[in-house]
Amino acid sequence: MSEQSDWVLIGLDETTARRQGIPARMPVPRGEFEGLADKGLGIDAARKWIKDFLTNSEPGKSGVWRKQNSTLVSQFEAFLDKAPVWERAQKAFGERDYEKAISALKRIITMDPDDHAARLNLASAQANMGDHPAALKSFQAIRKTFQGDADYHVAVGQVHLAMQKKDAALDEMVLALEAKPDCQPALDAMVQLGVLTPIYENPRDAASLVYVRSDAVLEYLAGQWDAAPRDGAFYLEQLAYHERELRHDVALAAAERAVAASGEGASGERAHLARIAALRSLGRTDEALAAAEAFVATAPSSSGAWVELAKCLSQAGRGAEVPAAVERALESDPGDLAALSLRFWPSDPADIQKVNEAIPALAAFVAAHPESAGARRSLARAELVAGRIDDALAGFAAAVALAPGDDDLRAEYWTELGKQQRYPDIIADAARLSDLAKRDWKLRWNEAEAYAALGKNIEARAAFSAINFDESLHVDVRRRAKRAVKTMDETPPVVP
Image (cartoon, rainbow, N blue to C red; front, side, top):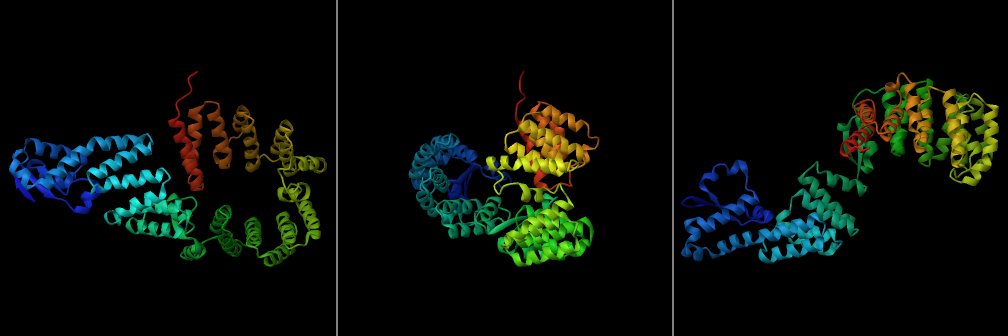
């Protein structure tokens, strides 16, 4: 640091100066020097002070001083001359005109080769242009300057990803996380690479999100589960969450623990069936079949047990035995949707012709079981595939009348009403439910969407907000509701 009357010439860390594209020595007004540590040195202030120093200070106006410090003066003048070119580059970035941005940035680099901020932006522009080899070369040229900067390593890693160099990309993301352990772009990239898996330890708590090595998810969760006493409800919640995420090995472990903790009853049945399904999904067919046979022996009235047995028999290549298991399932519950699908529906449920051909037999089954909401629901689904919309909606309404407490059924009915833009029907049906706030979130979601579609934004916002604040729901559902509210706030009202 040297003093020049009313000015103080300070020396900056060379790496920091290159990162910011500013001279390594800076003139600072003596009156600003004391507060510099707290305020920091911004680019605008640096330009202002350099210009003032060169124009008005005694050293700046001295030809002798300028000659003795010609290199520094050249750096100061280049820094000032770059300003309008930087403006052009920033404007081009804002307009996504990366070709113009590259041209401006190359001009800056010619003026000041030590401006590594310009080189960093040049690499970014080249990457946005799809010129990944050039971008990588530009990034590598400034590696020493930006080594240890999380954003730099993420940017380089993304270029490697674009070039299908996954190992190199992974190395960069690791460096980014070493520099900043909560670097979200690096975490997201490692999820994309299949190295990490995002897990909610508690599916209802956003703060419980952790990133676990993809090859050690079960090991990690087992350790967490063992850390405190857990009941059957806990394992059933874990089971449902990991089933949805198709983590069959974790679902199997949760199911086995739920079986041990839940005992008999509906919870025990759910756990047993989930264990069989997980074994089947993991390709452990013999074990799944043995478990299904054992469970139907102890729970012969469980339609779900017979359905799982049918699926295991089919997977084991014993197709001739499947119809008998399906019939036993329908004897136990004529409305079991999975059994009805196995019995009446074609293997491709989107095949309109085959679904049409299946409708008469399914309709006859419904007529033979007029009190079965599930059978009526299956027929309504088939009618939807066949394009018989009015018949389908009438069928869903009839099914709801048979099972008014089945929220999943009613939610499906409201979803189909929404697809046909029959929003007033949804609102009217919702008005008949005195306890909608306590019902399944899918019903509340359909109601909110209906209000939004009808332009009743106050009601829609209130309904979405209620879902967002419901701590009993999965965090992803609550986030969706929060985004819905935000979208409504950002969308201007429709002017009549």
